[in-house]
Image (cartoon, rainbow, N blue to C red):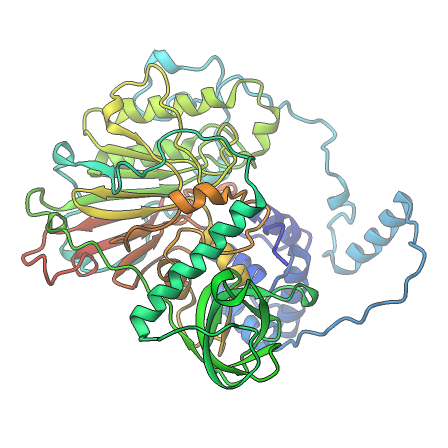
Amino acid sequence: MMATSMVTEDELVQEFEDFDIELTDPDVVDKLKELCMVYRMDCSSIVSEWVAYSISRSNQKMTTDSLEEMEQDRISKKKKKVAKTPTMKSPAVFTSDRVNEETDDLLSAYTPAGKSKHKRLHTTPENPANKRLQGVHRHGSVPFSPASFSPPAVATPSHKYGSRTNRREVVASYGPTDSITWKGTNAQTCSVQHYDTEGALKKKYKNMFQKFTDKASVLNDMIENMAQQFQDKHGIENFSHVALPIQEPVTAVGRVCCDTSTGRLNAQSVLLEGSVDTSSGKQVMLSLSDIKEFSLFPGQIIASDGINSKGVKLVASKIYESVPLPLCQSEDNSLSDHGPLHVMVAGGPFTTSDTLSYEPLDDLIRVMVQDMPDVCILFGPFVDANHAEIKDYTQDPEDLFKMQMRKLAEATKQIGTQLVIVPSLRDVHHDFIYPQPPFPIPDNLPDKDRLHFMSDPCTLTINGIVFGLTSSDILFHLGSEEISHPPGSSDRLRRLTKHILTQQNYYPLYPPPECMPIDYEHYEQYAQMDVTPDVFISPSDLRWFIKEACGCLSINPGRLTRGQVGGTYAKLVITPSQDSKTAGVTVRSAAQILRI
């Protein structure tokens, strides 16, 4: 069963405040969200685990190290208990008074002395402030403020964001960062274009007309296409019917599914669904008892050796690794005609959760003007549907987006940086469908040639370097559903990236969560990879990272803001190659992830 909600930073802060614990370290927040995701815990559960653990350790201070110790000593050792189906009873009726009384009793047992036990019940302040804003531009926030887009009112700055002390702190590095010049000089010679110009998604399309037969056909074709690649890579002569009773070892291919009667995917609930051509679309249980090491998720297409003596369970003896597409071998990616390529990357939201002043975006523009990157890739959301202020926003959210685009174009005019804009499903003013078409080009946008509005996902070539981009949080969604054995046997973040590259599409998870409305007819056309990109970038709520996988440099720059505090962004420099035939992009790259 797919997760229908994700733990947010604001929810964690609220829950821990009830226990007089203040979350100020962004790394601690990231680790808490990771624990909630991996172990399927909600906010109250992780708080209970920490309170019990810290009390047993004489109120130990919360750090990333102490959270990892708690994970090893307490959470990971808990065995899942299969709940028995209870006898049907008449539903109990709870009045609001009874609920409030029981909540008060529970909170009073945990809340420190001096704290009001009614804290969580006050969801509306006695003197509510008016959140309806007439404008979003903070006066004096950036040195450039053309009167053409000065709003009629001023948004209040975020005090918590403004008081941060870790500006531009480097939190992750890759490659020879000490010997790299981080300031760009070649923006005028930078070329940004689609990898497949004719097959790229460039405009809106009709959706909600998807037929079940068309969807089934797309899913079946994916198995067939991958099956051919398994045969070519591993020398498999033919594939057996997954449900054919046979006493001899056979090789079957299909999609990993979950036996929904047991909840989410686990080692005992794995099904293998064959294609229509080889297996008539049948499903069988896949036994992993003889497999010493595996990593699976729903929707993954695999090939497996095994015995299916009764036609209902395939006892696997070997699982074949998926096959990534080859890297682009174009000589143009040597950068010999362009010099080093400087790229800056940031993922939205671009304003803190307590204001629409867009201070973090203003700060990112300052960094951009100072470092002069050749290209800056910005992922949505730009106008976040989850932002509390947007619910009461009285103006057209699209006007807010256009204002930020004009600000970006005007501020970077002198340095000539190419701006790549990728939308998000959380952008309240844009199409809620995946694959997502690009934003329409705003009217009266200065210097339009430098702003490249792309789809989600998209594959681009920037001075010959192939970039794979998606703003969907596929890393987080995969991490929520993936199972692996033995635990901790490999780098989980690198493994998640490898899943995406070897499955050869930007969103291999199936079925998707409710937050991912996928149109599978267009998914087949626009979400499949044509080649393994040299650089894969996907902002995620998971912890930021820079990893190499399948010869591809994978970057999760994190979010520019997380709740009311500042987040992170990334910088990347790819140097020219002396020998394009031997020197791949990963060995010519240096990258950093920094706090805004």
